[in-house]
Image (cartoon, rainbow, N blue to C red):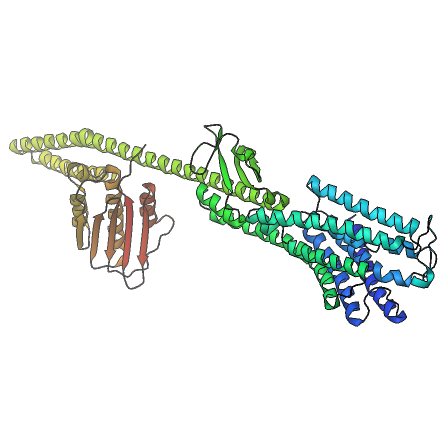
Length: 591
């Protein structure tokens, strides 16, 4: 079906071009121009005008939604050549009346084309009434030429009209005058209507809907000039070039207006970029108004709680606002989840459905993007809250376990150690050296077990954080390290237990890694606090080259920091040592 449509259109264009070229060639060969201007210049002008309409018809079929505009252009191109064929067919009484009757059909088609601009179809009732009037006038003239026109062979050199019912020598002249008067009146009506609407309309109406009034007014002037030349035999000289120039301007003006509207559609895509991060209502409204060149454009947003629309400023939409203003139209934008917005715009923009579809799609895409972004942010926040709750629960569980070990098992072992010392003293006093030696060995083993228990308890939760503060805890880590460690802690007040514990274990892991792997001679730990974060920097002067690897100590450090919504950065260059910087929010709380 599509191939047949393309073939038929291509055939129509070929016929239009061939008829125009052939008419001029045969006129030149036979030197038979009739009342038309003759010469090579005029021949080229007539060919260019016909070619102009044919080429614009091809473009219109591509860019205009409906095929009507393209067919009107190619039809005008075909019948544009009728005026040149008329002198060549005067020897045949069955042909020349028909050719003479359709000589001005191109003008009818061009008039309809103007009324179809820019949407490619007739929308207003007044436009359709004008078309009916033009077609009625044309059919009346065509019937008059067929039934009455019978010029004398001596004057026109033509055969007798085979269709004439009431032959008349002056019928052709008077029908020509009447046709020109009626046609000029209709053309002036169209021109004045479009011009008045152009001057009284808003900016989008001027730029999108009515860009050809000048060409139409020039054509009207050309028609007046042609009518005076026809009725009075006036020789207008070089002014004769004005009508074909005006006629040739109309299809490019039509196509240019459509391309302008398409340019607006492409600019609508920029609205998605404007609202890529968030649908800012005021920004979206102002950007849309600027894109469509409609400063009076307004957007009303649906509010689910109010069950109604509100302005971009948050005010309730006035009752009947989108429908009561003259010259305005409303575009409703809905999704499968319900209403989204109402866009009140200049009525001229309704002539381009694709432009409004692009606006609707851009807003839908922006709103969907905003909804997905909010949903993703909520999900991420839920993950953060869940992770913090897990960290907090782990912290509390370790505190309980450390307290149980300290208050329970550790105290029992200390009591047992005291009992063993007493028993050892009694055995020595009784002179039982063998028993005393056994008791001393048992006391030594108990001391080792107690020391291991204390290390285990410190690994579960550092008691020094409970009894002291962060500075004393890091000082203790520095004292236990196998490397000299310089400690600087600038934290005026206590941090939350979770943050302090995270810093303690991260510093412990970093110092252990430095002692084991870096071959460093010195280490430094710096802890500073701002209003919102605490920063921990651990530096060594070792061999560098440290990396975060799966299962490694640095990965554990990073995981601990990220669990409290912080981040860790490792800078380690071979030969230049390692710097580990931890940044943790100080306000880590669990909802």
